[in-house]
Image (cartoon, rainbow, N blue to C red; front, side, top):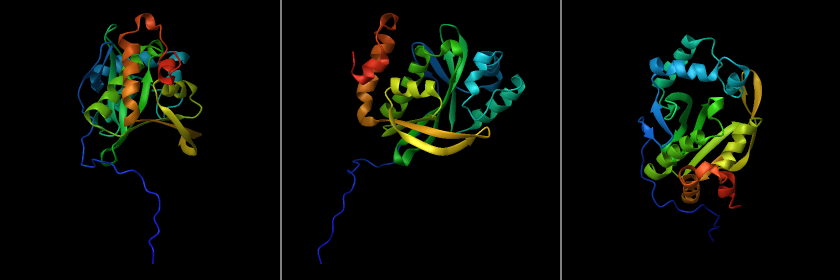
Length: 230
C-alpha cells in the first residue's frame, strides 16, 4: 500500500540547546540597560512615571501601576529584581544620567529559540527618541547575534496605537489579533502580535544602526528604512 506524503516544515539545521539572556549591563551610545536595583532605581522611576496625567498614561495598558507611592513601587521592583522570566532591566539615559524606563525579556523558550520583548515603558520625555530604538536594538542583538534565537515577539493591547506603531517602525511584522486574549484591570484585552525572524534581522539591524549612529538630527525615518521607502 503506497504511503501518503503530507507537507512538512523545513528542517532546522541546529537544534542543540542554547542559552538565556544575560543579567548584565547592556551598553549603548545613548543608554545602558542594567539589572534592577530597587533601592537605587525607585526614586527616578517613580518621578518619571508619576505626578501628572501625562506621565501616568504610561500605565494605561499595563497590568500594574500606577503606584500609590515610592514604597509600593519599590515592593514591585523587588519582585521584578528576583524574576528570571520576565527578566527586567532599567533604562539609564546616559546624557541626563537619569533612569527613564524599563524593559524585559519574557516568555523565553530557549529550546524553541524564541522570546518576547515586553513590559516596555519610558518617561514621556524619552518617548519617540533614540532611547526606545537603542534599547530594542541592544535586546535584539542579544537575542539574534549572541543567542542565535530564531524569533523575537512583540505583543501589545490592540488599542495601544503607540505600541503598535513602534513595533512596525522597529521592523516587526504584524501577525494577527488574538481576540479576548486577556483581562487586564477588569477590562477586555485583544492582543496584537508582531515578530522579527532571524532571517530578517540583518537588514533591520543595518537600518537601526544607520538611524541611530549615522543619521544627524534623525533626518531619516526608521519606518521608511524598514519599509524600503526612502
